[in-house]
Length: 285
Length: 257
Image (cartoon, rainbow over the protein chains, first blue to last red):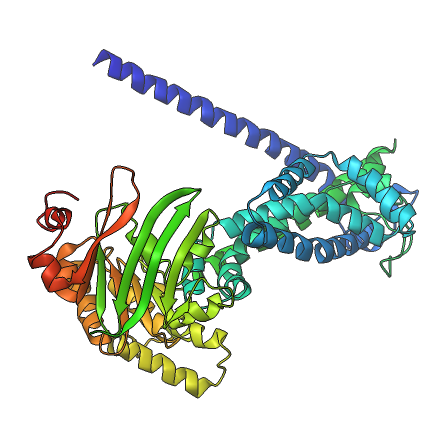
């Protein structure tokens, strides 16, 4: 009887510690958000979105940075998603289980852990100098694509692996070719999971600063980027730039830009969750 | 003398270099139900999956020996696996309808063969659902998700789906083991009906089921070495009343397994 009480007590204590840990994490995050909101909400106005950066804090806006972010993200998605999903399909559905495949898998896992600035150096050498793309949106998007490919491949593979084997067997047994099995049965079921992975990978890319600074993205852009070959800046760089200024006015602008970045991120994640729930209901096995 | 559709010659399957079944010689007669019985792990399913080359999907599996289908070696060099699987259909242990509509489940086989004509597809879907004794239950909800059906209905849908590629042989891997007795009875009645037109090979660990539905019975057993072998094959009547092998008798009288 005594021992049972002690066991139950221990269980309770552990539960309490675990709860405290998650509350601590949430609290810090909440305070951070509160602080940013307190300082940044004031600057959010229409002109904040439509103005270019300026040396006068009260006139500075995020127009070029937000446009740059949208350009870079759209191109990054365009390059990385088809490549990442195709690579995942190859590794999960086609690749023979041998040493070469294992070597590829090992390297993908390692690449996911490489610091992002290294990708910046690669992008600088390969895209900016090697392919002579200069410090363009295209070079930035290609660099970020490389950065998130490992994440995308791993997430897509998880989604493909979660498709029950019985589904593939059923399709094969009806005389479907491997591609027909993948196209008509596996991909539709794996799609919500792939979508989630895709949005999470893009969320990672949208906040990246180091690799883009490395390839030479600008910090002061007073024009609209109009083509993939234009020079550009993105929100995180703009934020970084404003935070490092001495004037308090720029710090408020930085907080405002952070709020915009968070809103974009939140919107992306909400969209992912919404689409996943909608599609999953249709494909429940 | 029965007409033979499928014949194995010295069929052996290895998984990771270890034999799972060895030296199986078996003849499957046309438009009859042949049951493969035996205790768990004797290689019944492995044998069944040789007939439509489903073992190809398991990277560690190696098949040696021959399987003749209408006189052609299924493991020969010029054989199109896709064609084999179209002509030899399969129904699995756990009902595995696609997470799509009832209609799309049945239409999948014809569609991937390139049949696009809606009227033709409608006709195939109705014919196969009728053949699988499911039409009356689903005719008003063809476009409803197949996963809303009961387990027994799902399994009959899987049979209808297999029939839609117009196979000559139906392989059934314990098709009723996940179903309740009523649903099982329906599947068994259906099998008897289908045997007028199709050759059926069924794997079952349920001896009563084998005795009830099959015309021929093959008894398999794995010895001390855990390698499955065909012990005895013959008309079901004879296997269950006058088995020649002592081990068959022990098994059907429930002394082990």
